[in-house]
Amino acid sequence: MSYLQAIIIGLFQGITELFPVSSLGHSVLIPEWFGWHNVVAAQSAEESFYLAFLVALHVATAVALLVFFRAEWKRIITGFLQTLRSRKIETVDQRMAWMLIIGSIPVGIVGLLFEHTLRTVFAKPTAAALFLMVNGLILFGGELFRRRAAVRALAAAHPQHGNLEPGRRIDSLTARDAMTVGSSQIAALFAGISRSGVTMVTGLARGLDHEDAAKFSFLLATPIILAAGLYKIPDLLGPNGDGIRGQAIVGAITAGLASYVAVKFLVRFFQTRTLTPFAIYCLVFGALSYLRFG
Image 1 (cartoon, helix red, strand yellow):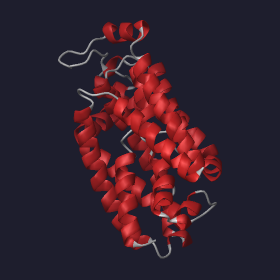
Image 2 (tube, rainbow, N blue to C red):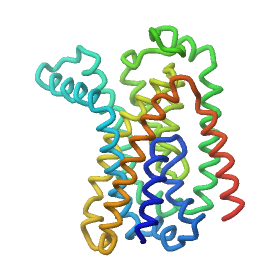
Image 3 (cartoon, rainbow, N blue to C red):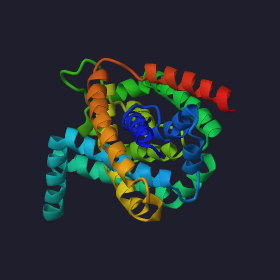
């Protein structure tokens, strides 16, 4: 892998990890569009330099999220430690800490058991293109579903004050809501399905507005992305990382900077906008990729 490839892949990884368009799908499709066939083949291999390279990018993305939401994470971690001492959940930050833990359990278990199998089977250009189109339909469906009377009733039961869009408060989410939103991340194990996309759609279905659905999605994704990256650090430090550690550092820096800019943009974007533009992009790019590689 060249340094130019590392920068390009890092840039796309940093953006697509947070945009609801699937970073895993793009990590397959973008190299294929550039004609980097050895990189694409390595994505679905049992062990490869590309997987070791992606470890660094995932860690960098998680670090960018931690830095951007550092004030929230400080309160959340403090709240978690307080609950361990008092054995009570009394504040908003304490509730958020346990909702993030509960929401992370399902995908953590399924990821450990099936991530390797799903990647080797489905992390291929044709499958990624098809799942990217499915992701577009999910985003469109989420925008339609949130208009249903039952969802509007949820939003009205615990209303936000000052937000431009009607929606329930994040602190009104229950443990069941957190489990539901967190479990939706399992779909993102398929290359082409976006983690942030499915969690946002599920958050909208539970009555959140776009801004809070995005924020909860980013907070929920941070420990999963970080844990997945740290879990696979031995791949980068071992034989699979030979010859690409310098590229991994450059790619990680690029991905981290891109992720920070992306989350800053999206937090503002979802104050007034919807998932529809991303749904259109997924359908168009997925269709073009399928026609090109199918």
